Length: 266
Image 1 (cartoon, helix red, strand yellow):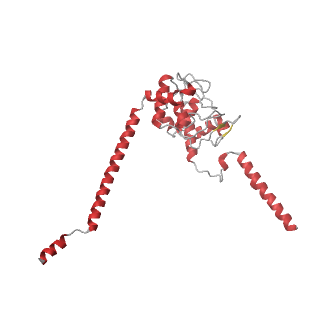
Image 2 (cartoon, one colour):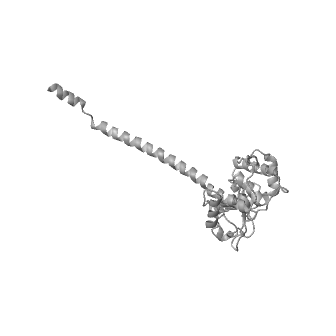
Image 3 (spheres, one colour):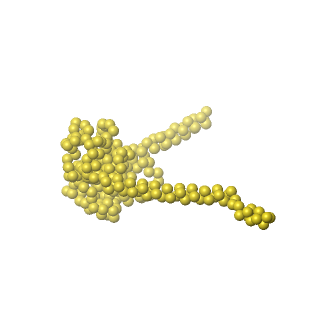
C-alpha cells in the first residue's frame, strides 16, 4: 500500500509543467500563424503588383486625373494636355507628389505621393499607350559612373543659374523656385532634363546628349555623397545666407561690444 502511494505521488506532474506545455503550444501556434499571415500578405502584394495593367492605369487616371486633364487627355482649363508627355513625365510628377495638384499656385510643390509605385507605373503605362512620349532611360545613364568633372562643368553652364552652383536650389520670379537637388534620385534628374517640368526647359539631344546627361547625373550624385570641407555650409545659398549671417552675428557682435564699452565707461 505504501509502495503504491509512493508510486502515485512520484508519477504526478507539476502544475508548472502543465503551464509550460500550454505556453509552448501557444508560442508554436502563434509562430505558425504569423508565418502564414506573412506568406499570404506577400502573395497578395505580388498578386496586386501583377494584376495592375494598362486598364487599371486608365481607371486610376479617370478617377484621379481626368477632372483636370480631361477624359481624352486633351486637357481642360484647369490642366494641360498630356499628349506627348509620355510615361517618364507621369512617373516624375506623380511619384514626387506634385500631381495630383492640391491647389492652383505659381508652382506645384513636392510632397508625399498619393499612390503606390505599382499604381504610378500603371498610370504611366496607360499614358504611354494613349499619348506616347519620353520613356525610361537605359540603366547605364543612371549608374553614376560618368565623368564627374565634365558633368560638374556642364551643370555650371546649363543649370547653376537656377539651381545654384551647389544644387541647393534658388528663387525665381513670381513666387516660383528651382528645387534643391541634394536628395533627388538619378531617374528624376534625367526625367527633369528630358521632360522639362514646370519652369525648367527641355534639354533634348541637341542640347545635351545622353552621355552629357549621364555626366551631370554622376556629378550630382557625387555631390550628394560628398562631405563639405569648407566648414559651415549655411544652406549652400551663397552670398544671401552668408550676408545674413554676417549682418546678424557680425553687426550684432559689434553693437554688443559698443554697448559694453559704453556701460563700462559710465
